[in-house]
Image 1 (cartoon, helix red, strand yellow):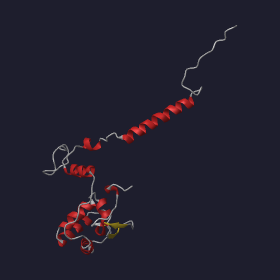
Image 2 (tube, one colour):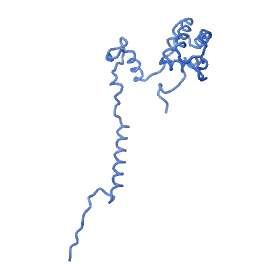
Image 3 (cartoon, helix red, strand yellow):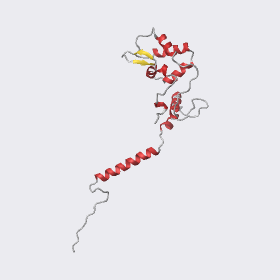
Image 4 (spheres, one colour):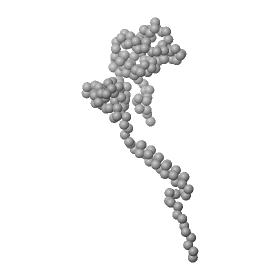
Length: 180
Protein backbone atom coordinates (compact mmCIF):
# COMPACT_ATOMS: atom_id res chain seq x y z
CA UNK A 1 0.00 0.00 0.00
CA UNK A 2 1.42 3.39 -0.94
CA UNK A 3 1.11 6.49 1.21
CA UNK A 4 -1.03 9.43 0.22
CA UNK A 5 1.14 12.26 -1.19
CA UNK A 6 0.81 14.51 1.87
CA UNK A 7 2.17 11.73 4.10
CA UNK A 8 4.96 10.74 1.77
CA UNK A 9 8.39 12.35 1.62
CA UNK A 10 8.75 11.34 -2.00
CA UNK A 11 11.35 12.95 -4.18
CA UNK A 12 10.79 16.62 -4.79
CA UNK A 13 12.87 18.98 -6.88
CA UNK A 14 13.17 21.08 -3.72
CA UNK A 15 14.62 18.35 -1.45
CA UNK A 16 18.25 19.50 -1.81
CA UNK A 17 17.23 23.01 -0.79
CA UNK A 18 14.79 22.00 1.97
CA UNK A 19 17.22 19.59 3.61
CA UNK A 20 20.14 22.02 3.30
CA UNK A 21 21.70 22.93 6.63
CA UNK A 22 21.49 26.36 8.22
CA UNK A 23 23.80 25.31 11.04
CA UNK A 24 22.97 24.66 14.66
CA UNK A 25 20.53 26.48 16.90
CA UNK A 26 21.24 27.65 20.45
CA UNK A 27 20.51 24.14 21.80
CA UNK A 28 23.00 22.53 19.40
CA UNK A 29 20.34 20.96 17.18
CA UNK A 30 20.99 20.88 13.42
CA UNK A 31 18.54 23.21 11.66
CA UNK A 32 17.56 22.64 8.05
CA UNK A 33 15.62 25.00 5.81
CA UNK A 34 12.64 22.66 6.21
CA UNK A 35 12.71 22.82 10.00
CA UNK A 36 13.38 26.56 10.04
CA UNK A 37 10.41 27.33 7.78
CA UNK A 38 8.22 24.97 9.79
CA UNK A 39 9.21 26.70 13.02
CA UNK A 40 8.09 29.99 11.49
CA UNK A 41 4.76 28.54 10.35
CA UNK A 42 5.63 28.78 6.64
CA UNK A 43 4.82 25.93 4.24
CA UNK A 44 8.32 24.79 3.18
CA UNK A 45 7.41 23.55 -0.31
CA UNK A 46 5.39 26.65 -1.18
CA UNK A 47 8.20 28.89 0.05
CA UNK A 48 10.74 26.87 -1.94
CA UNK A 49 8.59 27.25 -5.06
CA UNK A 50 8.25 31.00 -4.43
CA UNK A 51 12.00 31.44 -3.95
CA UNK A 52 12.76 29.34 -7.04
CA UNK A 53 10.62 31.67 -9.15
CA UNK A 54 12.64 34.72 -8.03
CA UNK A 55 16.00 35.81 -9.41
CA UNK A 56 18.83 34.24 -7.38
CA UNK A 57 19.90 37.50 -5.68
CA UNK A 58 16.34 38.38 -4.67
CA UNK A 59 15.73 34.82 -3.46
CA UNK A 60 18.90 34.92 -1.33
CA UNK A 61 17.83 38.22 0.24
CA UNK A 62 14.33 36.92 0.93
CA UNK A 63 15.71 33.73 2.48
CA UNK A 64 18.15 35.73 4.63
CA UNK A 65 15.29 37.91 5.88
CA UNK A 66 13.28 34.79 6.72
CA UNK A 67 16.20 33.18 8.56
CA UNK A 68 16.65 36.36 10.63
CA UNK A 69 13.12 35.85 12.00
CA UNK A 70 14.15 32.59 13.72
CA UNK A 71 14.00 33.11 17.48
CA UNK A 72 16.90 30.84 18.51
CA UNK A 73 19.60 31.80 16.00
CA UNK A 74 23.17 31.76 17.13
CA UNK A 75 25.28 34.83 16.27
CA UNK A 76 25.63 34.08 12.54
CA UNK A 77 24.35 37.39 11.14
CA UNK A 78 27.66 38.08 9.36
CA UNK A 79 27.49 34.69 7.60
CA UNK A 80 23.79 34.95 6.73
CA UNK A 81 24.23 36.25 3.14
CA UNK A 82 26.75 33.48 2.40
CA UNK A 83 24.52 30.77 3.92
CA UNK A 84 21.41 31.96 2.06
CA UNK A 85 23.31 32.22 -1.26
CA UNK A 86 24.62 28.65 -0.80
CA UNK A 87 21.10 27.38 -0.10
CA UNK A 88 19.46 29.29 -2.94
CA UNK A 89 21.99 27.72 -5.32
CA UNK A 90 20.39 24.36 -4.41
CA UNK A 91 17.00 25.47 -5.77
CA UNK A 92 16.02 24.14 -9.20
CA UNK A 93 15.92 26.55 -12.12
CA UNK A 94 12.97 26.82 -14.46
CA UNK A 95 9.52 25.32 -14.14
CA UNK A 96 9.06 22.58 -11.56
CA UNK A 97 6.11 20.20 -11.42
CA UNK A 98 3.67 20.86 -8.60
CA UNK A 99 3.82 18.73 -5.51
CA UNK A 100 0.90 16.30 -5.65
CA UNK A 101 -1.92 17.11 -3.25
CA UNK A 102 -5.24 15.58 -2.39
CA UNK A 103 -8.49 17.48 -2.84
CA UNK A 104 -8.67 18.11 0.91
CA UNK A 105 -5.15 19.60 0.99
CA UNK A 106 -5.96 21.95 -1.91
CA UNK A 107 -9.18 23.09 -0.21
CA UNK A 108 -7.37 23.64 3.10
CA UNK A 109 -4.64 25.71 1.46
CA UNK A 110 -7.24 27.83 -0.32
CA UNK A 111 -9.18 28.34 2.91
CA UNK A 112 -6.04 29.52 4.66
CA UNK A 113 -5.83 32.34 2.13
CA UNK A 114 -9.45 33.41 2.70
CA UNK A 115 -10.19 35.98 5.39
CA UNK A 116 -12.20 34.68 8.39
CA UNK A 117 -15.94 34.87 7.88
CA UNK A 118 -15.70 34.75 4.10
CA UNK A 119 -14.95 31.06 3.52
CA UNK A 120 -17.57 30.72 0.79
CA UNK A 121 -15.75 33.19 -1.51
CA UNK A 122 -13.58 31.85 -4.27
CA UNK A 123 -9.91 32.53 -3.65
CA UNK A 124 -8.76 32.23 -7.24
CA UNK A 125 -10.86 33.21 -10.23
CA UNK A 126 -11.98 30.11 -12.07
CA UNK A 127 -10.98 27.80 -9.21
CA UNK A 128 -12.65 24.44 -9.58
CA UNK A 129 -12.73 23.45 -5.90
CA UNK A 130 -14.30 25.69 -3.27
CA UNK A 131 -15.67 24.51 0.04
CA UNK A 132 -16.38 25.68 3.52
CA UNK A 133 -14.74 24.26 6.63
CA UNK A 134 -17.89 22.23 7.33
CA UNK A 135 -17.59 20.52 3.92
CA UNK A 136 -14.00 19.48 4.57
CA UNK A 137 -14.50 18.39 8.17
CA UNK A 138 -17.58 16.21 7.53
CA UNK A 139 -16.47 12.62 6.82
CA UNK A 140 -18.58 10.43 4.61
CA UNK A 141 -19.79 7.13 6.04
CA UNK A 142 -18.46 4.33 3.90
CA UNK A 143 -18.38 0.57 3.97
CA UNK A 144 -15.50 0.53 6.45
CA UNK A 145 -17.44 2.63 8.95
CA UNK A 146 -20.46 0.35 8.74
CA UNK A 147 -18.31 -2.75 9.15
CA UNK A 148 -16.70 -1.32 12.27
CA UNK A 149 -20.08 -0.48 13.80
CA UNK A 150 -21.37 -3.96 12.93
CA UNK A 151 -18.35 -5.61 14.56
CA UNK A 152 -18.85 -3.50 17.70
CA UNK A 153 -22.53 -4.48 17.86
CA UNK A 154 -21.68 -8.18 17.56
CA UNK A 155 -19.00 -7.90 20.22
CA UNK A 156 -21.46 -6.16 22.54
CA UNK A 157 -24.07 -8.86 21.94
CA UNK A 158 -21.65 -11.71 22.74
CA UNK A 159 -20.44 -9.86 25.83
CA UNK A 160 -24.01 -9.61 27.15
CA UNK A 161 -24.62 -13.30 26.42
CA UNK A 162 -21.43 -14.28 28.26
CA UNK A 163 -22.24 -12.15 31.29
CA UNK A 164 -25.81 -13.32 31.68
CA UNK A 165 -26.22 -15.99 34.40
CA UNK A 166 -27.95 -18.58 32.19
CA UNK A 167 -25.79 -18.13 29.12
CA UNK A 168 -28.75 -17.13 26.97
CA UNK A 169 -30.97 -14.15 26.65
CA UNK A 170 -34.14 -16.16 27.27
CA UNK A 171 -35.94 -15.30 30.53
CA UNK A 172 -35.73 -17.94 33.22
CA UNK A 173 -38.77 -20.17 33.45
CA UNK A 174 -39.88 -21.53 36.75
CA UNK A 175 -41.11 -25.02 36.47
CA UNK A 176 -43.78 -26.12 38.83
CA UNK A 177 -43.97 -29.67 39.98
CA UNK A 178 -47.24 -31.33 39.33
CA UNK A 179 -48.18 -34.38 41.32
CA UNK A 180 -49.27 -37.49 39.55
